[in-house]
Amino acid sequence: MNAPMQRDLLLAIDVGTGSVRAALLTEAGETLAFAAAEHEQIVPHYGWSEQRPADWWTGAVAVIRRVLDMLPGAAARVAAIGACGQMHATVLVDGNGQPALEAVPLWNDKRNRTLLDTFMQEQPWEALLPVAGNPPSVAWWGFKLQWLKAHRPEAYARTALVLSPKDWINFRLTGAVAIDAPEASCTYLFDVGHGTWSDALAQRLGLDPKLLPPIREPYDVLAGISRQAAAESGLHEGTPVVVGISDYPAALLGSGVIEPGLASDVTGTSTLLTLCTTAPVLHPVISNVRGALPNWSAFTILDAGGDAMRWARRALHENHYEYDRIVSLAAGVPAGAGSLVFLPYLNGERLGERANSRAQFIGLTSGHGAGHLHRAVMEGVAFAAARNLRIMEAAGNRLDRVIAAGGGAKTPLWLEIKASLYGCPILTTAAEESGVLGCAMLAGTGIGLYPDLPAAASRLVRFTGEIQPNPRWMETYARLGPVFDHAYTNSERYWTLLEAAEAAEAAEAAAGPDPQTNH
Image 1 (tube, rainbow, N blue to C red):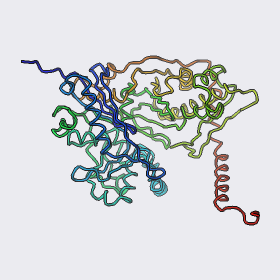
Image 2 (image 1 turned 45 degrees about the horizontal axis):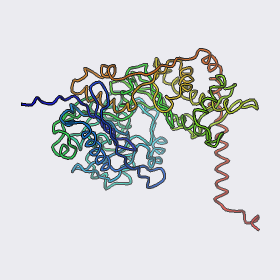
Image 3 (image 1 turned 135 degrees about the horizontal axis):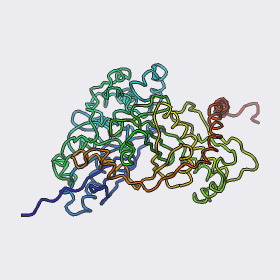
Image 4 (image 1 turned 120 degrees about the vertical axis):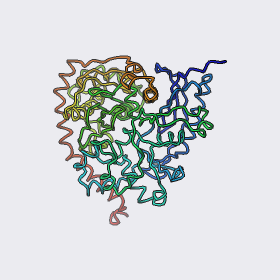
């Protein structure tokens, strides 16, 4: 008689905006198989962004089968499954378990902007911060559902349940429904003080709270793989599936950012800053998401990061310089860039105190060269990020260490600039797919493979380097910090004047040529 095969693998599934990904990992966090299937983002109108839930399921089945085919007997070796997914996408499910809409609005869909503006004008939204834990945003479920109720009334009337992308995949895998507390916390329908759905917020938005799924912990076992899903995916029927989590908290978990005092800096095109806290930070420019553990992650998204460096490369060198050369130029000038300060708001701000903010150099002289400008751009992004971190710290939260990820984590100069402005060490991690690793931690914890999530993080998260603050740079930045803050605070009058001038010019252009001067 053959001995039963050991269940020694964890299956992670990530439903992203660009693709569905799957990976098979060992108990030690080593990735043995990985596959991805791309899906398109549908943009029927400016400001809209949609995807088809059917495409997510097709992609999930494809990548699951591909990773199972990469290892002998893999399906029998899978001990548990954990999924994460893009946040805020709003899947309406009818009474037959089918999508009520073929395509659903995603996190970056802004068609509900008018409804949001009306809500903020008519409701005391700042007074609602202690309940919602977040300022209003076009991203949140509540405002997306408002739009769907108003503009897709037939689909909304057929809706029996609202799910996120990850929850839709879990439903297709098991037939069971639930939402993780982190995803629920960023819906504007969640009571952060009680950890439950808020009837009061739903009422203010004119929504039915009965459409919302049960809230559970991310590591809770949801159910086993159904017979139908086993036939489609190649997985074994009954394999346990945990509730899972949103992709952002999954990445924080996979980076080890799970205890108060730890922060995350993910710099790609934009800069996503997170500080792990014991309670939400209630501030108009700060958003909050419940963590994989029952703590909170206060975060801001700065629409400046790699995008600012990309702009400078294009504007100063017409894209002829490689980034290594640009960083070398910046490294060749002292900290402070010769008293040159850059406000990095090239595309304004999402939740800034000054939504009409713009970029500008302060202190530019004929003595400044390309290296000074590039260093000022890098430092400007760090000044803006540090400003947001100070808001989080001012609420009584400590900042011990920052864990860096994204493209910015590969530039030591930028990390040293940030460490010197943040006033704490910055660590880099080995994981390239921290969200996938976070899913594996949840799956393993759900079946008792790890005693708890901190133990899983201690075992699986590996750090590759540590950048310490530069004391001399810290002194320089302490002198220039007030210049940055003063420029940010007092430049709104100029931004407003520029907006008015642009509006007048646009109106003049729309009116056509002056008939008296058209000879």
